[in-house]
Image (cartoon, rainbow, N blue to C red):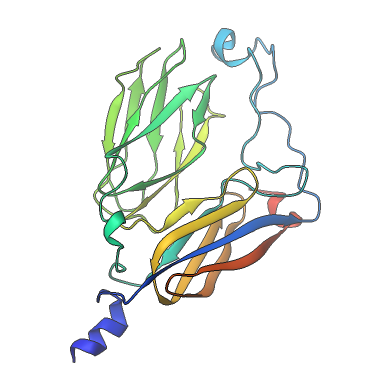
Length: 246
């Protein structure tokens, strides 16, 4: 009977550990988005800070090869939590930093564990606020003062089913996404669209890939994790048309 439970919720000890990697690319030509704020635009709020350099629209961050950044790639379980490699049971840091600089949120896409806190700070000479829109956790709507390096610590006790939007109500173009998880097997694609998830429990697992404009790029990506091996899932393609509208 205990073995059956292990198969259902995958909470038994794994026999080994492996890694997966891959790349997310746009199939076709990604939309060319206008900037959120044009350099020198004196009509925007706090233009002396926000319009100094202009602000790109990071809802599509893609290079000239079509490689797509800021996609969330993660292990999905219907219930329970996965076996966790001993090296990953505790996060590398108890606090992850979330900055406001040049009237942008940095980073644009953030993975945070339930056993971590988000430290929201500001390197801007104007005030901002951090307004979160979770499904499971308490929503935050906090003012972060100008050049506030102490900031505020935000906690999340429950894993979220999806990345949640974070906005600044003072500067409405500011937007980011946080994904709160209760395991270490979630990452964000880098500037070249690459992702790597290390020290996964061996066996067949479901993975999901999510992007703010598309939603699910992959909702049931089955991958066999092999002990001591790196499994390259290759290139995951996103139809450029799916990026056209949020």
